[in-house]
Amino acid sequence: MTQYPRVFRVRQQFPRPRVADVPAAVDAALAGLQLAQRVRPGQRVAIPAGSRGIANMADILRAAVAHLRRLGADPFIVPAMGSHGGGTAAGQLQILESYGITPDYCGCPIHSSLETVIVCHAAEGFPVHFDRYAAEADHVLVCGRIKPHTRFIGDIESGLMKMMLIGLGKHAGALVYHQAIQDFSFGQILRSVAREVLTRCHILAGLAIVENAYDETACIAGVAPEEFERREPELLRQAREWLPKLPFDQADVLLIDEIGKDISGAGLDTNVVGRKYQEHAPGDAERPQIKYIAVRGLTRETHRNATGIGLVEFCRSQILREMDVQATRINCLTGSHATAAMIPLDYETDREILDVVLSVIGLRPPASARLMWIQNTLKVAELECSEAYYDEARQRSDLEILTQPRKLPLGADGQLPTVATFV
Image (cartoon, rainbow, N blue to C red; front, side):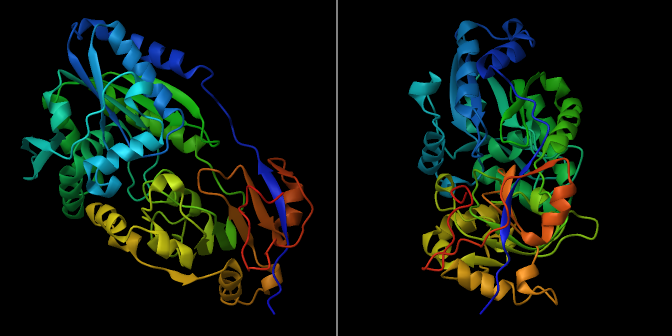
């Protein structure tokens, strides 16, 4: 019988800047851009809304709509999420509704369509797609979160400029841009397309959001169109500093309760788990260095899209029964990331997963395994850690030990509870 490691609960201390009044911060950010000099009464303004689970997103959009209405504008929202939602207009509308982004709450219509217009051809030779509703508007207010990308590396990663490509390019644009990235580079295609969109698509301004390590709104910045390329690297550096981290640099096993598109574009944030540079193993200089990752479930908000399941080694079989295979494959293939939809080794119970994974960690006895257990890659402020870390944790001023080591709470059915409910 496998001797499982005992676990203790630990709380990490991260910097925690927070926006106290989100609507007021949105209003101030937009007021600083003096949009009244460009927006005329009655003009239509499109506001893109993405598929990520951004904190306070419905409130941010509602405040932006209210600001534009005070200028006399006629704002509306468009889903901007590439191929998410199964690559359908109805599916993307459903995703927004699951985040509380509705016409009634935001105070404006939501126009969902996968139809695009081709505004030009990029210098690299491919067509530049743009949401038809946004293209027909007088202005576009780009709203998005600045964050390190899960695959690509550069001074600009996920943010306003990417929203103009992958989000507002819809499924057709996302597909062609990811294909172009295979032949050129993420940075080249990002800048090439973004510059065309900024020149041709009536971009009014940007509303940039940065979150802290607790998945809270830490910064809301208004950015003029001509400042996108300069400001995004500055905001990305700040986002990297505030990115959540696991407390230990080495692990034999990482248990993750849930992955989903609302957590990360890759289902799980590869920056957090140390899998950004290569799949199924950390890069030489990457931290943390984790041997095996096991996933236990999907978030409700991912709508059965299991993108990222192919980045881990083990999962519960229930995930494979729940996942929407077609939606997952569409999303991954659109992003030229076929391996993210591949199937890991699956087992019915957590006990079976632990028995297998603890048998392949090397010479370290299973009871001494270095194991971390988190809810998801956005929520790592509190987690369970195996007893192998206990002595180090006691010496760390940035860690608060909340419990003594105790048995893993495997039930008679062989399943663990969620880490959030195990106290």
